[in-house]
Amino acid sequence: MASGHSQLAEAALWLLLATLALSIGRSAAASASAPRVPAVIVFGDSTVDTGNNNQIGTTLRSDFPPYGRDMPGGARATGRFGNGRLPPDFISEALGLPPLVPAYLDPAYGIADFARGVCFASAGTGVDNATAGVLSVIPLWKEVEYYKEYQVRLRAYAGAARARAIVRGALHVVSIGTNDFLENYYMLGTGRFLQYTVAEFSDFIVDGARWFLSEIHRLGARRVTFAGLSPIGCLPLERTTSLLRGRGGCIEEYNRVAREYNAKLEAMVRGLRAKLPTLRLAYIPVYDAMLDFMTNPGKFGLENVEEGCCATGMFEMGFMCNDQAPLTCDDADKFLFWDAFHPTQKINRIMANNTLNDCYQQGVL
Ligand SMILES: *[C@@H]1O[C@H](CO)[C@@H](O)[C@H](O)[C@H]1NC(C)=O
Ligand SMILES: *[C@@H]1O[C@H](CO)[C@@H](O)[C@H](O)[C@H]1NC(C)=O
Image (tube, rainbow, N blue to C red; front, side, top):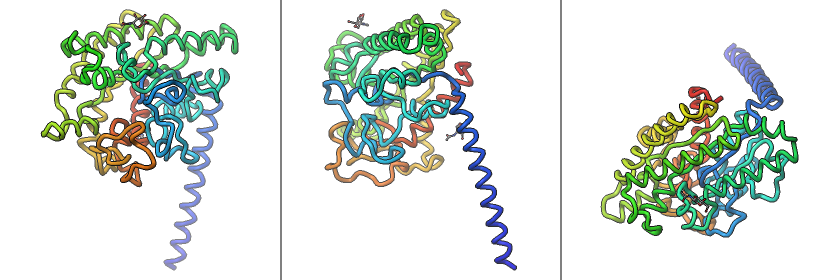
C-alpha cells in the first residue's frame, strides 16, 4: 500500500516536472521568436567587458583558465573577468536574445551578430581619459567612436531605417566608474589626486558620465541603464590593502566616496531625464545589492563574501589568477567574488535580474 502511494506520488511528480519543462520550453521559444528589444549594446569596464581586451595590447586580460571555468557548455576563457557569464549576457538571454553578448573587437563575430548584441566595454577603463591610460585600455570616448563605426556598418548591413530602429529599440547597458577611483585617483599614478579633492573628482566623473549619456542619446540611444558604484572599499583587494595598513575589514573611506558619488550620479540622471524627454534612463543601485550579499550571505547561499575564489582570493586578478596558482576554490557559487575584484557568475545573474527589474520600474523597458 505504502509503496503504491509513493509510486503514485512519483508519477504525479514526473507529470508535474514534464508539464513545467514543457511550459518553460514554450516560454523560451516564445521569447526567442519575439525578443523584447532588438539588441543589447554594452559600454563600460571589466564588469561588462566580454572580450575586447583580448584584442588590444594590455596586460589586463583574462583569456586563460581558470577564467571562464563555469561557462555554459564547458570551460572557456573568453576574456570575461569571472568564472562564467557577465550581467549583459544574462540580460540579453532574458530579453530573448543570444545568451552571450559578443565583443566588438572579436574577429570571430560580424555585423550579423552585432545587430542583436554588441559590447564595446574594456576592462580597466573609466570615465576619465586618464584611467584608460594607466593600463593602456580603451578609453570611453573611443568606445563611443566604435559605437559610431558600428552604426555605419549596421546601416550598410540592415539599411538606414532598420539600423535606426535597432539602435533606438536596443537596451544600452553601461557599467563604469570603479577604476576612476581605485585605479586612478587612489593609486596616485595619474596626478588627479593633486588636481582635485575627492569630492571635486566625483563631480568631474559625473560630468563625464553626463557627457557620455548625452552623446549616445544624440547618436540614437533611447533606452539606457547606468550603474552606480558598489561598496568599493569592500572588494577583496581593498580589504587586503586595509589589512596591510594594519586595520582589516572594508576601507570605509572608499565606501563613503562611493555613496557620495552615487548620490551625485542619481541626481545627474534625474536632471538628464528632465532635459532629454526621449531618453529612457535608469540608474542601477548596485551598492545596496552588493551590501545585501555582504551582510546577509546566508540568504544567497554564500559562505565567503570577503575573498575571491581564485587563488588566495586576497589580491589575485588578471594574470595572477591562473591555473598554476594554488588554493582556487571548488565551488564558486559559495563565493561573492571570483577574483580579488570581480563577482562570481552566480552574483552576475542576480545583478542582471536586478537591472531588468529596475528597467521595468523606471520605465526603460
Ligand atoms: C578625452 O579625450 C578625447 C580624445 O582626445 C577628447 O576629445 C576629450 O575631450 C577628452 N575628455 C576629457 C574629459 O578630457
Ligand atoms: C528576479 O527578480 C524577481 C523580481 O524581484 C524575483 O522574484 C526573482 O526571484 C529574481 N530571480 C533571481 C534568480 O534572482
